[in-house]
Length: 370
Image (cartoon, rainbow, N blue to C red; front, side, top):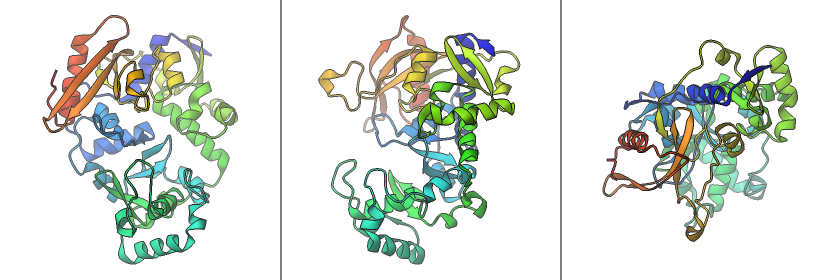
């Protein structure tokens, strides 16, 4: 088993992320390729700075022109599924999710809503088939104000989406517009892989290739595999035996690695990047602490008087180290990205923060106010 210094492991992981080091305007192909490389990109509704998927992608591809993501959805090149959480994936990866989707009989939050609302579900499907794409507002509204207080129609639409009978054609603002999957994707993209062992091996390998190096104990978290580390153990062993993955040790962590990542000189990154709290690099807090020595905490749901860091704190990555936490807010009326507070891990790095915030603000179409 090859041994990696913790810094080597971090360098391999950061290099695999493809973080941008300069200002750039992304093409649709850039965005598509970033989603393919990462395996999935988490979607979240919080807008304190920008939507989570836009922040994660901007850190890698730069400014994303308006309409790019919807264009990729409508052209069937990307799709929304439940992966890590609600996520964007490359549409060619859909077969690895379709069997689980088609096997859904209810909704993870609202239970067996399709059985309880059988008539409404049938009417919704008939309407989409006859009239084309619809949103929740077209069939009775999204519901009362609030995050999850959905109307019955919205619950049905979400259950039909989760079960693969509808797909997301576009978003208007953050509102999903649903359509038939076959209007967006090819038969090959919609053909489910039905062998559960093959699906499990794919998820393990895909997660490791997306990270370069991943701890064995936490690899299940990337695609939220039910059963945890025990569930992926046999799949990992099969992939190692086949030479598709390698076992390595990084410090005191038993890891899986992409064998290709272990060849050649160790990569070094000089990027200074402000990371979305839901960025792929840090979304597993246990692994982040073990490999990066950084305790990532999300305080959105913490009452303000009890917050230590701030409402929407973006970790600052410099090279292969997480050096601080920055509480940011986008003032869209003033067109500014404001730094509310910076909390350092060890020696402050104000010059790196300045580079990172200027590039992030530019990517979001904002100025970088102090």
